[in-house]
Length: 111
Image 1 (cartoon, rainbow, N blue to C red):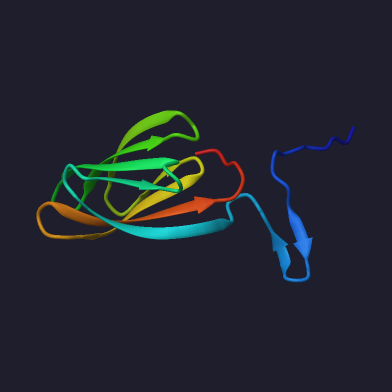
Image 2: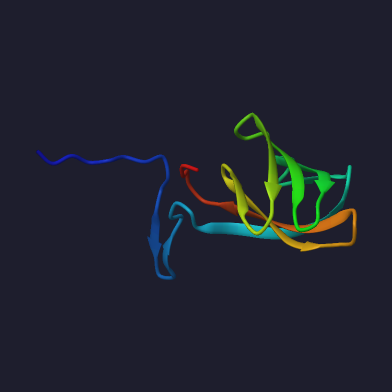
């Protein structure tokens, strides 16, 4: 028996190629934060608060208003995934600051 799997995303095929594939980057931005500061991105869809800074890591509170979830993560060379966002540490800025990259991806994926 052969079955079909339906997904909630719509893939577009056009003259410029295929787009809207799950995991495809829609946009990305870099944000510089100091401990205690918050950044709101994607029309306030994601709130990022820098909770603390270690030797080579940053602790962030991520509040996704799309998924109605709040997560606290430590980044040290890895990325955090909070649907539909990916957050990664780009650089340390002294003892109390960081630069992070936030990407929004098309479609749904499982962490």
